[in-house]
Each structure stands twice: as C-alpha cells, then as structure tokens.
Image (tube, rainbow, N blue to C red; front, side, top):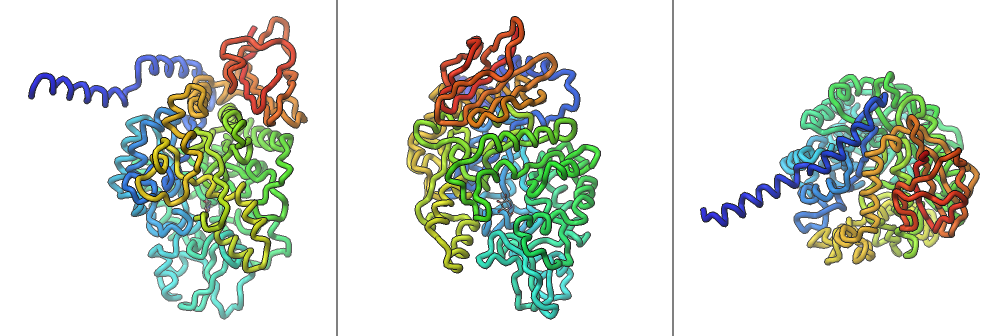
Length: 605
Ligand code: NOJ
C-alpha cells in the first residue's frame, strides 16, 4: 500500500476511534463533576440521568419509505451523544400492524418491519453502549394487537388454550356493563365477536384487546419476554398504562358519573401491586436497569406504593397532574382559551416534589408522544417568543429535583404544526374522536380548533435535521407532514448558532450534571402566589442556587424572594438572554425580567 494511502487510512481509523473516545478535557470535567457527588446518600444512576425520548417513526429514515427506522437512529447516535443525555427511551419498536403506532404489538420479540430487523436492533444497542448511552424500551403489556397469535387463538374457540389470555364476556350473560374506550368510534370498550358469540374488552382501540393478567400464564409470558430483552442488554422499561393491568374482572355496574374518575374504576385493581412485585422478582431485580411507570391516575397518596425501594416494585413513575392542567372540564382535550394558571402549575410541581422529598424519586416532563409540543402548550410559539420560552421551559425541566424526560425535537424548539383539516391527521385518537363526534352530530369545527393545540400528532411530526427537502428526515414522502418551520428550525442551523435553543439545551444538561445541587438539592418554592414568575431555590449542603422563570410575554419587575444576608451576592450561572452573563453578579435590588426570561444564580459569600 502506498505510504500516503496508508497514512490516510490510519488517520481515518484514528478519527473514528477518537469520536468514541472521551477527550482529555471531557474526562477532566467528568472527574470534577463526579468528585462533587462524593458522599451524597441514596445515589442512583437513574436519578442523575437525563432521559431523551425518541419517537422512532419520526426520528430518521434510512431507506426512503418515509418512516423513521432503527438504522436511521444508528446513523444519528453521535448527535444524541452530543446532547450529553444518558438514556434514550424508544417508543415501541416491536412487530405491529400500527393501529396505534406500535402500541398494538403482534410479536413482543420481533421488530416492526418498517423499523428494520433484530440485527439492526442489536447494532443500535451496541452503538449506544459504546457511547455510554443506555437504552430503555416501552413495555406495552396491558393489551396486545388483535393480530398477535395469542389473540388469534383466543378468539378462535371458547376451548382454545389461549382463550383466557384475554377478557371475554359470553353473550348469553346479556350485554356487559358499559366500559369506555379511549379510541373507539362508539366509545365502547366491549366489542362483540361473532365467532364465539362473546364480547372482548379493549380499553384502547378495537385492535388492542386487553390482556388478562389474572391468568398466571399470561404473567409468565410477559416476564419471560422482559427477560429476553434484558438478556440482550436493554437497560430498562417505560411501562405503558401499567395501573390498568389489574382490573375488577367481575365488571360490575359503575356509578352513573364514573367518567370523572375512570381510573379508579378501570385500573388499580385488587392485584396490581402483587403483579408488580412478582414482575420485580421474576425479572427486574436481576438486572441493573431502570423502570418508569406511565402513572395514569396515580396520586401523591398512592405513588409510594409503586416506587418506594422497600416495595420491590418499580423505581419511578410519571404523573398526569401537570400535563392535565388548563383543559376545560368535561370536554375532550379543549384548552381553556384564557390559558392556565401559573400558581396552579407551581402548586402541582411543588406537591409532587414534596411527595418524594423523603422517600422515592420523581420524574418531570412537559412533552412526549402523547402531548402537543411543550413550547406551544406551556410557552409561546409566536415568532418573537418561541426561542426564549423554549429555553425557559428547558431551564425548568433541567433544574427540578426529578429525573427529566426530555422529548426529541424540544431541544430545537419545535412547535405544534396545527393541522387545518382532519385529512392531515394520522393518529387513531384524533381520527376516531372526530368520527365519534361526527356520528353524534357534535361541533367538528370546535373539535378541530382544539386539536390544533392538544392533538398528539403535533408532537409526532418528523425531526428536523436540516433545511433540505423533508428536513433531511427522509428521501421519500414523510408519513406525517413536516412542520414548515424546518427551514430555520433544524439541527444543522442550530449547531452553528451559539445562541440557539439546541446549544442552550446542551449547556443546561451540562450544568445539571456537573452540579449535584440541581439533581439532589432540596427544593423550596419562593413567592408561591406570584402569577407570572416561578422561582425556587435548590439547596445542597451549604450550596444554594435560585431559579427564576418568567412565564409571561411581558417584562416583569421581580423582587428576589430570598433576601440577601450580610455580605451575600447573587452570581449568575445560566440565563436565556445575554443580559446576565454566567459568572457576573446580579444587581442587589429588583430585577427586570425580559419576556420568558430564565435565570439561575448561586448565592455566594
Ligand atoms: C399510552 C401511550 O403512551 C399511548 O401512546 C398509547 O396510545 C396508549 N397508552 C395505549 O397503549
């Protein structure tokens, strides 16, 4: 081989290896940060982690079919690494007919054809682990797809060995007591099946029959499947609607107004914790993994039963109190035009902080695949405010005492697409609710207006890599329309701009991870009745930091809630405007906060 070619090859190999190897300065920074954590009690890697959620359908398409896939994610691992996050949570990637974008699984140990193969999965897991990133999968075990072999068998005859894998109600007993289904055109969770003259239960779509956890064989199947993924090296599970797995299977008549409290009657059945303890024993406890429950209907009073260490069940859960704020009561996801109350918002997040102040550990999120874009719902997506309010919300998420679950695209400041017509939607929830309202002669214009703010598809539009056609997401036709803002809101542009939302996110991740006060520090709400500014202190040992967030589009005079003690000063650590640079001291009197300004400062002597 000619010498020049040899040198080039060696250099290329070296460069590739360097990409994976932490740089000297990075190592020094990591060491400094880890020294700061020494001696903190109750430390766990999943408490210190920043979780980045990737919706695989919309992240990166490698083969031009318009659908994101595993090879696509693999090709972007260096981007994920560059964010500084520790864990990736992937929405379901298992074989599925896709009635609910993978939340309807037809083979728990197979990969969805559109996403790739098991070999692609193995390569992805390896690539993540090589970069020090952990991978958490989605466990969808309350229901399967009706195309799963278990259900095909189950519906074939009343004597089939799989019959009791699902909940059946024989027609000769009369019509079962009504149950509500989230995604059914008629709103009914019982579907009549003529083959065996029985009804089956489906809390979600008709193609998502509920599994019967009362049957011990079903539980064993699920635990075996979990072990299958753990043995591959997967680092944990996010557990879909897990409180639903145990139900009152006598299906009694419900009180007339049960809708206000469906979780009480539909979920949290008598054996829920027994099943979770069994799951822990049969699968979870054997691995160094993390678990997080989708805690639908879980309250501060019931949360400890799921996550306290001595319960031997799960580690974390996420609640719905925060994301449920600001909707009009009794209406389907219609946001109150008057907006939401910041005082109520603070009350919710403070209550959940105090829930876990002594025991257990919390989570925090403002966006995910079931939510609209956080900047539209909780900030302000008008051109003048999209960037500062995205950064302000990022500051909030990364400075609370709870593991942050950060949704892909929010780091770019992606906002709701706000579709004009039903034809543009792909989500079973919006489509079937539309059909239901239409059948009932309801107000479709009002419904569609509401969906522009709250529909799940707003958070599912393809990721924006660059300003080329289809934002570099695919060379084909994207499965869901791209947000037209991609020409300027994209990775390529934001990587180059030091003041971008993306670079702000990276800085906030670094700040959190290198300062344990932001992870473990005690949280104290300041000025709880201020309707415009959310301020709180975080204290660890003799270190105290204060976070001040202006949640409005107006300037605000703010009198710092914690008065300065003799000789004390406020040293800026982070801010989303250039007015206060890190390291500078704040003036002693009032602060004039700009619209959606976020400031973090440290009290120093
Ligand atoms: C909750 C999931 O997050 C959502 O996307 C899904 O539609 C339902 N569970 C049903 O699995």
